[in-house]
Image 1: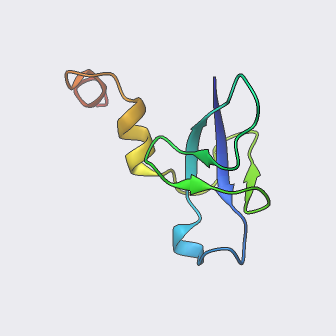
Image 2 (image 1 turned 90 degrees about the horizontal axis):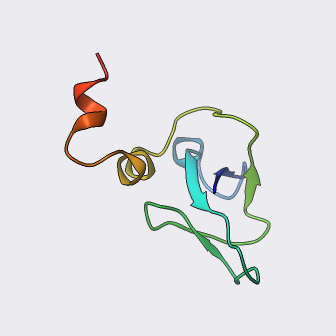
Length: 76
């Protein structure tokens, strides 16, 4: 399962407040979570979203896209 999170206002500038995809841990909660793009998200720095808000993280989207170019081929 993936969660959609965005860094809180004031943690980073507005241009970096993109929506990241983060695998939800099944065991103990680690000291930080890692987005699909590799961004480390620390407790208290992000908000969990109930839907897409603002700009998505392109790197997270590409990591979650089907392989073989299917995602791009069917986009239009």
